[in-house]
Length: 130
Image (tube, rainbow, N blue to C red; front, side, top):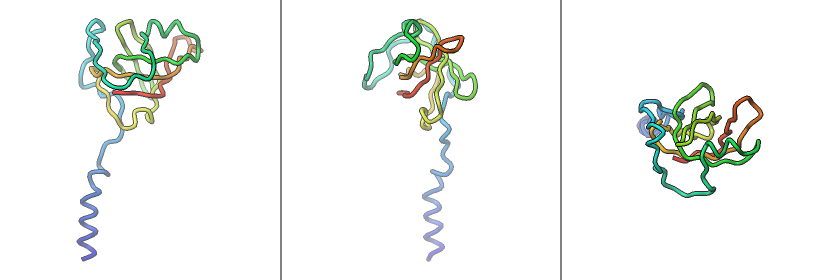
């Protein structure tokens, strides 16, 4: 009887053990061209949205909220984010993905802080919404 219970519990737990919790950018689909990026995100708005062009003019450490597409993974936690006005490098820790996968054609919203200490401006993402 104990063996049957153990086998049954193992059967119930197996899908969770085999689940892929990596998350991140899945590059199966090509991103839309910049001129075709439309307002596709649906959800709550917690900050005024701005374009990448506007964000790049802000001061170092400014809080930014951007809407667009993750179009490339440059390695580690570095990605390229694009909206209608341009592209910017972003740093997204795996904890922010929280196991979720993002396709290049999916409109997402990112919140974070602008880091202008390096040669190029970078957004350090603290929140991602699909």
